[in-house]
Image (cartoon, rainbow, N blue to C red; front, side, top):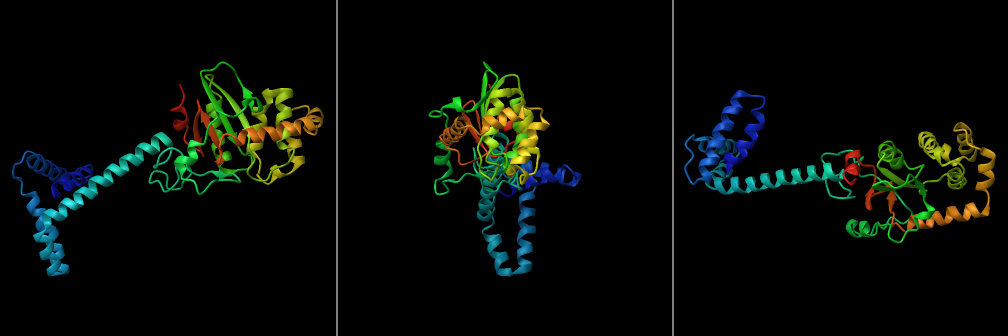
Length: 307
Protein backbone atom coordinates (compact mmCIF):
# COMPACT_ATOMS: atom_id res chain seq x y z
CA UNK A 1 0.00 0.00 0.00
CA UNK A 2 2.85 2.38 0.77
CA UNK A 3 4.00 2.09 -2.83
CA UNK A 4 0.66 3.49 -4.02
CA UNK A 5 1.15 6.67 -1.99
CA UNK A 6 4.80 6.82 -3.07
CA UNK A 7 3.81 6.46 -6.73
CA UNK A 8 1.57 9.54 -6.60
CA UNK A 9 3.93 11.66 -4.49
CA UNK A 10 7.01 10.77 -6.52
CA UNK A 11 5.11 11.36 -9.76
CA UNK A 12 4.34 14.90 -8.61
CA UNK A 13 7.88 15.50 -7.37
CA UNK A 14 9.21 13.94 -10.57
CA UNK A 15 7.98 16.97 -12.50
CA UNK A 16 10.92 18.85 -10.99
CA UNK A 17 13.43 16.07 -10.24
CA UNK A 18 14.93 13.26 -12.33
CA UNK A 19 15.67 11.28 -9.16
CA UNK A 20 12.02 11.32 -8.16
CA UNK A 21 11.00 10.30 -11.69
CA UNK A 22 13.11 7.17 -11.27
CA UNK A 23 11.50 6.48 -7.91
CA UNK A 24 8.06 7.05 -9.42
CA UNK A 25 8.79 4.39 -12.05
CA UNK A 26 9.87 1.97 -9.32
CA UNK A 27 6.70 2.72 -7.35
CA UNK A 28 4.53 2.22 -10.42
CA UNK A 29 6.17 -1.12 -11.16
CA UNK A 30 5.69 -2.16 -7.56
CA UNK A 31 2.00 -1.17 -7.53
CA UNK A 32 1.37 -2.92 -10.86
CA UNK A 33 2.94 -6.14 -9.59
CA UNK A 34 0.97 -5.97 -6.34
CA UNK A 35 -2.25 -5.57 -8.34
CA UNK A 36 -1.39 -8.67 -10.34
CA UNK A 37 -0.63 -10.58 -7.10
CA UNK A 38 3.11 -10.63 -7.69
CA UNK A 39 5.95 -9.61 -5.41
CA UNK A 40 7.55 -6.20 -5.80
CA UNK A 41 10.97 -6.75 -7.42
CA UNK A 42 12.46 -3.30 -6.99
CA UNK A 43 12.58 -3.55 -3.21
CA UNK A 44 11.10 -0.07 -2.93
CA UNK A 45 8.48 -1.19 -0.44
CA UNK A 46 11.13 -2.70 1.82
CA UNK A 47 13.35 0.41 1.58
CA UNK A 48 10.43 2.70 2.42
CA UNK A 49 9.45 0.48 5.33
CA UNK A 50 12.98 0.54 6.68
CA UNK A 51 13.35 4.31 6.30
CA UNK A 52 9.99 5.13 7.88
CA UNK A 53 10.27 2.74 10.80
CA UNK A 54 13.88 3.87 11.31
CA UNK A 55 12.66 7.40 11.93
CA UNK A 56 10.26 6.16 14.59
CA UNK A 57 12.99 4.04 16.23
CA UNK A 58 15.05 7.21 16.71
CA UNK A 59 12.13 8.87 18.49
CA UNK A 60 10.99 5.88 20.56
CA UNK A 61 12.07 2.22 20.10
CA UNK A 62 8.69 0.92 21.26
CA UNK A 63 6.86 3.05 18.69
CA UNK A 64 9.35 2.00 16.04
CA UNK A 65 8.88 -1.69 16.88
CA UNK A 66 5.08 -1.31 16.78
CA UNK A 67 5.28 0.50 13.44
CA UNK A 68 7.54 -2.16 11.95
CA UNK A 69 5.28 -4.99 13.14
CA UNK A 70 2.05 -3.41 11.88
CA UNK A 71 3.49 -1.51 8.93
CA UNK A 72 1.17 -3.07 6.34
CA UNK A 73 -1.95 -2.31 8.36
CA UNK A 74 -0.82 1.26 9.05
CA UNK A 75 0.09 1.85 5.42
CA UNK A 76 -3.32 0.49 4.38
CA UNK A 77 -5.10 2.95 6.69
CA UNK A 78 -3.04 5.87 5.39
CA UNK A 79 -3.63 4.78 1.81
CA UNK A 80 -7.41 4.77 2.37
CA UNK A 81 -7.19 8.24 3.95
CA UNK A 82 -4.99 9.43 1.08
CA UNK A 83 -7.36 8.12 -1.59
CA UNK A 84 -10.38 9.56 0.24
CA UNK A 85 -8.63 12.93 0.39
CA UNK A 86 -7.95 12.86 -3.35
CA UNK A 87 -11.58 12.00 -4.05
CA UNK A 88 -12.73 14.79 -1.72
CA UNK A 89 -10.48 17.33 -3.41
CA UNK A 90 -11.61 16.17 -6.86
CA UNK A 91 -15.28 16.42 -5.83
CA UNK A 92 -14.68 19.86 -4.37
CA UNK A 93 -12.93 20.94 -7.56
CA UNK A 94 -15.84 19.69 -9.66
CA UNK A 95 -18.36 21.58 -7.51
CA UNK A 96 -16.20 24.71 -7.63
CA UNK A 97 -16.11 24.62 -11.41
CA UNK A 98 -19.83 23.88 -11.81
CA UNK A 99 -21.34 25.83 -8.91
CA UNK A 100 -18.64 28.30 -7.88
CA UNK A 101 -18.05 26.63 -4.49
CA UNK A 102 -16.80 23.28 -3.20
CA UNK A 103 -19.97 22.14 -1.48
CA UNK A 104 -22.76 22.11 -4.09
CA UNK A 105 -25.40 24.52 -5.41
CA UNK A 106 -25.77 27.69 -3.29
CA UNK A 107 -23.83 26.14 -0.40
CA UNK A 108 -21.63 28.01 2.05
CA UNK A 109 -18.63 26.85 4.06
CA UNK A 110 -14.90 26.78 3.43
CA UNK A 111 -13.70 25.99 -0.07
CA UNK A 112 -10.06 25.18 -0.83
CA UNK A 113 -10.44 26.71 -4.31
CA UNK A 114 -12.17 29.83 -2.99
CA UNK A 115 -10.43 30.53 0.35
CA UNK A 116 -11.69 34.13 0.55
CA UNK A 117 -15.31 32.98 0.16
CA UNK A 118 -16.01 35.57 -2.54
CA UNK A 119 -18.21 33.10 -4.48
CA UNK A 120 -20.37 32.12 -1.51
CA UNK A 121 -21.08 35.46 0.14
CA UNK A 122 -24.53 37.01 0.10
CA UNK A 123 -26.43 39.85 1.73
CA UNK A 124 -29.10 38.21 3.86
CA UNK A 125 -32.66 39.44 3.77
CA UNK A 126 -34.66 40.32 6.88
CA UNK A 127 -35.80 36.68 7.16
CA UNK A 128 -32.73 34.61 6.25
CA UNK A 129 -34.29 31.42 7.65
CA UNK A 130 -31.02 30.44 9.30
CA UNK A 131 -32.68 27.52 11.07
CA UNK A 132 -33.56 25.85 7.77
CA UNK A 133 -31.01 23.53 6.24
CA UNK A 134 -29.67 24.86 2.91
CA UNK A 135 -31.21 22.13 0.76
CA UNK A 136 -34.73 22.87 2.02
CA UNK A 137 -34.12 26.60 1.92
CA UNK A 138 -33.04 26.42 -1.72
CA UNK A 139 -36.07 24.27 -2.56
CA UNK A 140 -38.23 27.33 -1.84
CA UNK A 141 -36.47 29.41 -4.49
CA UNK A 142 -38.87 29.43 -7.41
CA UNK A 143 -40.83 31.64 -9.79
CA UNK A 144 -43.98 29.53 -10.04
CA UNK A 145 -46.22 31.73 -7.88
CA UNK A 146 -44.64 35.05 -8.81
CA UNK A 147 -46.44 37.63 -10.95
CA UNK A 148 -43.51 38.77 -13.07
CA UNK A 149 -45.62 41.54 -14.60
CA UNK A 150 -44.36 43.63 -11.68
CA UNK A 151 -40.73 43.06 -12.68
CA UNK A 152 -38.84 45.24 -15.16
CA UNK A 153 -38.65 43.24 -18.38
CA UNK A 154 -36.10 43.63 -21.18
CA UNK A 155 -35.96 42.08 -24.65
CA UNK A 156 -38.42 39.55 -26.02
CA UNK A 157 -38.57 36.12 -27.62
CA UNK A 158 -35.09 34.96 -26.65
CA UNK A 159 -34.27 31.32 -25.87
CA UNK A 160 -32.88 32.11 -22.41
CA UNK A 161 -34.75 33.79 -19.57
CA UNK A 162 -33.01 35.40 -16.61
CA UNK A 163 -34.45 37.05 -13.51
CA UNK A 164 -32.01 39.20 -11.55
CA UNK A 165 -32.91 40.32 -8.02
CA UNK A 166 -30.25 42.60 -6.58
CA UNK A 167 -29.72 45.18 -3.88
CA UNK A 168 -28.11 48.44 -5.00
CA UNK A 169 -26.45 49.03 -1.62
CA UNK A 170 -25.36 45.44 -0.89
CA UNK A 171 -21.69 44.59 -1.39
CA UNK A 172 -22.23 41.13 -2.85
CA UNK A 173 -24.69 42.37 -5.47
CA UNK A 174 -22.30 45.16 -6.35
CA UNK A 175 -19.44 42.66 -6.71
CA UNK A 176 -21.57 40.39 -8.88
CA UNK A 177 -23.03 43.12 -11.10
CA UNK A 178 -20.19 43.31 -13.70
CA UNK A 179 -20.40 39.55 -14.24
CA UNK A 180 -24.20 39.47 -14.38
CA UNK A 181 -24.18 42.45 -16.75
CA UNK A 182 -22.13 40.41 -19.25
CA UNK A 183 -24.79 37.75 -19.04
CA UNK A 184 -27.68 40.19 -19.59
CA UNK A 185 -26.00 41.78 -22.60
CA UNK A 186 -26.06 38.55 -24.58
CA UNK A 187 -28.31 38.57 -27.65
CA UNK A 188 -29.88 35.24 -26.70
CA UNK A 189 -31.07 36.44 -23.27
CA UNK A 190 -34.25 38.21 -22.19
CA UNK A 191 -34.39 39.22 -18.57
CA UNK A 192 -36.26 40.74 -15.67
CA UNK A 193 -34.64 43.04 -13.14
CA UNK A 194 -35.88 43.79 -9.64
CA UNK A 195 -34.35 46.05 -7.03
CA UNK A 196 -34.67 44.10 -3.79
CA UNK A 197 -33.51 46.41 -0.97
CA UNK A 198 -31.74 44.75 1.94
CA UNK A 199 -29.50 47.61 3.05
CA UNK A 200 -30.66 51.14 3.78
CA UNK A 201 -31.29 53.21 0.63
CA UNK A 202 -33.11 56.30 -0.56
CA UNK A 203 -36.90 55.73 -0.22
CA UNK A 204 -37.48 57.20 -3.66
CA UNK A 205 -35.01 54.85 -5.39
CA UNK A 206 -37.41 52.04 -6.32
CA UNK A 207 -40.25 54.39 -7.42
CA UNK A 208 -37.79 56.39 -9.54
CA UNK A 209 -36.48 53.17 -11.09
CA UNK A 210 -40.01 52.05 -11.98
CA UNK A 211 -40.93 55.46 -13.44
CA UNK A 212 -37.73 55.60 -15.47
CA UNK A 213 -38.62 52.19 -16.88
CA UNK A 214 -42.06 53.41 -17.92
CA UNK A 215 -40.78 56.60 -19.52
CA UNK A 216 -37.50 55.44 -21.07
CA UNK A 217 -36.59 51.82 -20.37
CA UNK A 218 -33.49 52.07 -22.55
CA UNK A 219 -31.88 54.22 -19.86
CA UNK A 220 -32.28 51.59 -17.14
CA UNK A 221 -28.93 49.97 -17.97
CA UNK A 222 -27.15 53.32 -17.78
CA UNK A 223 -28.97 54.11 -14.52
CA UNK A 224 -27.88 50.79 -13.03
CA UNK A 225 -24.28 51.31 -14.11
CA UNK A 226 -24.14 54.62 -12.26
CA UNK A 227 -26.03 53.49 -9.15
CA UNK A 228 -23.85 50.40 -8.73
CA UNK A 229 -20.72 52.51 -9.10
CA UNK A 230 -21.40 55.22 -6.51
CA UNK A 231 -20.63 54.87 -2.81
CA UNK A 232 -23.21 52.92 -0.82
CA UNK A 233 -23.59 55.79 1.65
CA UNK A 234 -24.59 58.07 -1.20
CA UNK A 235 -27.46 55.76 -2.17
CA UNK A 236 -29.21 56.79 1.04
CA UNK A 237 -29.54 60.39 -0.21
CA UNK A 238 -32.48 61.48 -2.37
CA UNK A 239 -30.47 64.29 -3.95
CA UNK A 240 -27.86 61.83 -5.17
CA UNK A 241 -30.46 59.65 -6.89
CA UNK A 242 -31.98 62.74 -8.51
CA UNK A 243 -28.51 63.81 -9.67
CA UNK A 244 -28.12 60.45 -11.39
CA UNK A 245 -31.24 61.20 -13.45
CA UNK A 246 -29.58 64.41 -14.64
CA UNK A 247 -26.37 62.53 -15.36
CA UNK A 248 -28.05 60.03 -17.70
CA UNK A 249 -30.21 62.71 -19.38
CA UNK A 250 -33.58 61.49 -18.11
CA UNK A 251 -36.69 63.69 -17.76
CA UNK A 252 -36.11 64.45 -14.09
CA UNK A 253 -39.23 66.50 -13.36
CA UNK A 254 -41.60 64.02 -15.00
CA UNK A 255 -39.98 61.07 -13.26
CA UNK A 256 -40.07 62.75 -9.84
CA UNK A 257 -43.76 63.59 -10.29
CA UNK A 258 -44.41 59.97 -11.29
CA UNK A 259 -42.37 58.59 -8.37
CA UNK A 260 -44.36 60.54 -5.79
CA UNK A 261 -47.75 59.35 -7.04
CA UNK A 262 -49.75 56.87 -4.98
CA UNK A 263 -50.06 54.49 -7.90
CA UNK A 264 -46.27 54.24 -8.29
CA UNK A 265 -45.73 53.74 -4.57
CA UNK A 266 -48.37 51.00 -4.52
CA UNK A 267 -46.77 49.39 -7.56
CA UNK A 268 -43.32 49.47 -5.92
CA UNK A 269 -44.69 47.88 -2.75
CA UNK A 270 -46.45 45.18 -4.76
CA UNK A 271 -43.25 44.61 -6.72
CA UNK A 272 -41.39 43.95 -3.49
CA UNK A 273 -44.08 41.53 -2.30
CA UNK A 274 -43.90 39.58 -5.55
CA UNK A 275 -40.10 39.46 -5.26
CA UNK A 276 -40.42 37.94 -1.79
CA UNK A 277 -42.53 35.13 -3.26
CA UNK A 278 -39.39 33.83 -4.97
CA UNK A 279 -38.26 32.63 -1.53
CA UNK A 280 -35.28 34.99 -1.64
CA UNK A 281 -33.03 34.72 1.42
CA UNK A 282 -29.97 36.54 0.10
CA UNK A 283 -28.86 38.83 -2.69
CA UNK A 284 -27.91 38.66 -5.43
CA UNK A 285 -30.41 36.04 -6.56
CA UNK A 286 -30.34 35.12 -10.23
CA UNK A 287 -32.70 32.67 -11.92
CA UNK A 288 -31.21 31.30 -15.15
CA UNK A 289 -33.90 29.45 -17.05
CA UNK A 290 -35.62 28.82 -13.73
CA UNK A 291 -32.50 27.58 -11.89
CA UNK A 292 -31.65 29.75 -8.84
CA UNK A 293 -28.12 30.94 -8.16
CA UNK A 294 -27.47 32.81 -4.90
CA UNK A 295 -24.48 35.04 -4.31
CA UNK A 296 -21.77 36.25 -6.71
CA UNK A 297 -20.53 33.48 -8.98
CA UNK A 298 -18.03 33.23 -11.85
CA UNK A 299 -19.51 33.80 -15.31
CA UNK A 300 -19.04 30.11 -16.20
CA UNK A 301 -21.56 29.09 -13.50
CA UNK A 302 -24.31 31.19 -15.07
CA UNK A 303 -23.37 30.29 -18.65
CA UNK A 304 -23.60 26.58 -17.82
CA UNK A 305 -27.36 27.06 -17.26
CA UNK A 306 -27.96 28.72 -20.61
CA UNK A 307 -29.42 26.80 -23.52
